[in-house]
Length: 220
Image (cartoon, rainbow, N blue to C red):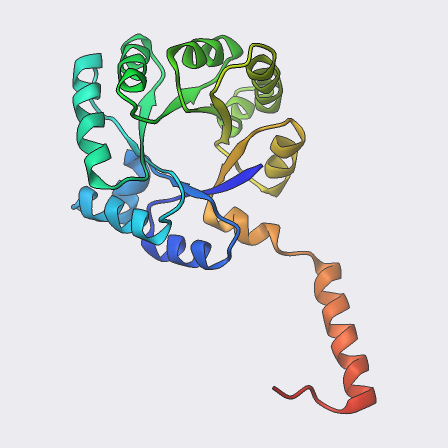
């Protein structure tokens, strides 16, 4: 499973890229607004430079298929690795089909059911962002949808990839990987949490202390 970072904070993306485990970036209007940059184009272009070999999702904000297609055509001019993020609805799927026909790579977002996955895949979506945490919030099992979606994609040999989104904690990442998600997009704070375990810290400290008993302080 590939790991994307879900943020528009350039400092977070720089640090995430330096870890060597991130394969892409997802953004949305909320994350871009939180980042505080009024120049969205330059922000996306900088993100694309920081992660030059990975997909960077930029989301449409218009309502009709024609408007979203026009947005998508503009977004992909910004950098070679821009993927157009399209909300799931009737107009969005029309736009995805049109973009796919033009060779524009897409990320269908706000997907909450297996039927929506089927429709997005049939429209030709590159990525399908199935939300986990937001479904859990209302008493449904977001990971079950991920598992069903992966099975559906593989059974019917669609080209789409399932992207686990709305990740709230490290366990969600583990569960998404076990469910077969192709990608998980993760808030930067959760990526940092994935590195932490008290037994790892304890073991490192013990090995260092034992080495110093034998050989004195470690020097560089």
